[in-house]
Image 1 (cartoon, helix red, strand yellow):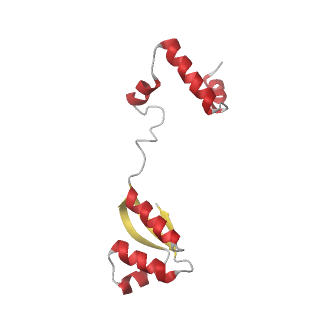
Image 2: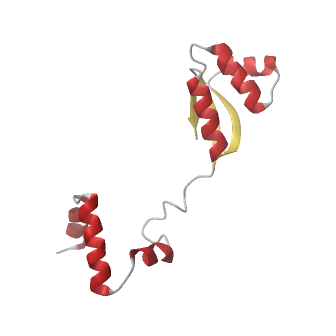
Image 3: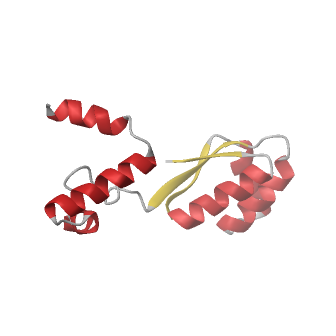
Length: 120
C-alpha cells in the first residue's frame, strides 16, 4: 500500500474510526499522538500560522446606517462626523492590525446592526 493510498483511506474515515486507529497505533508502537503533536507542526503547521491580528474593513453600511455609525464611532473613538464619513465611504479600511478578539467583536456588533465587515 502506498502513502497516497493510506492517506486516501484515512480521509474517508469517520471521527470514531480515526480515534480507534490512533489508539491502535499508540498501542502497537508505544507512541503517543499527544507527543507527536507537541514535537512540532512538521506535518502542516496550521496552528502556528494562525493570524492574531487582522485588518478590519467595513464593506457595507447596510440598511441601518445610524446604528453602524454609532458602533464605528464608539469602537474607534471617532467624532460623529468622522464616523459618518467613514461609514458612508464603505468599503473602507476601519483599522489595521487589530487583535483577533477585538476584530471579531467589532465584526459581530456591526453585522448585528446590519453592516458588513471583512477581516483580512
